[in-house]
Length: 314
Image (cartoon, rainbow, N blue to C red; front, side, top):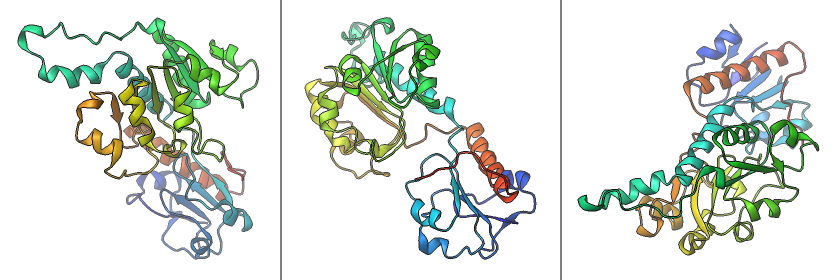
């Protein structure tokens, strides 16, 4: 029995605790793969004749050819149940930064005159209790955002067609039956869905056009849920969108053009309305270690011939 770590983890100290003596560098004998960024396709799988299972560090599996995996009778699992608080905390931080004008004030006050320091207020700011946060996707992370935003005092609604009726009663917030209905009433829209054929390219010009005038958009989920960040340029300039906060992008790292170029160059028309993070909302030292520990534990379950957690099917 042995486990092969494909990439990224150069010091498998955490994995060795869970899998003592089971980490191998031999592809021919490996029965389970622990995968970070490695692309998994038929050619790669051909190197592992004894493979029984693959466990991905993290949630997304865009680089995994599930058809190739399933055709070999190999089980594939991801590791979604880590970093929930980290991602939801990031989303809440972005919501607060936008709704309280924190980044915009930081941008503006660099040029304030001494005699007008406190007079330069952003006049469109509103009390939290007067703002509606619309959450798309009420799973682990979306549900955590809902609870935290509600505790601050925001009005919170969500849209999730995959949650059973009555789920809203457990969360103590209102459910909106359609996506368009949520966009129409939300002052801040936070997207928290997995990347699927249904959600890929969900956020584009049509989506933005249906948002409430002056609303803000937050994405701490998957970058390819958005068609193109440049779709936000004209809405920001016109005031249709008042704030944009992204932890993920359709292409990472991004090309230095359009909105990204304007953001990098601190162009005046943005005036602090755009926040971009480098896909790090999941990270703390604790969540990083938790992810590796849980992935290794699932690999051990596969080695033991038991049914692992978080099996992904087509």
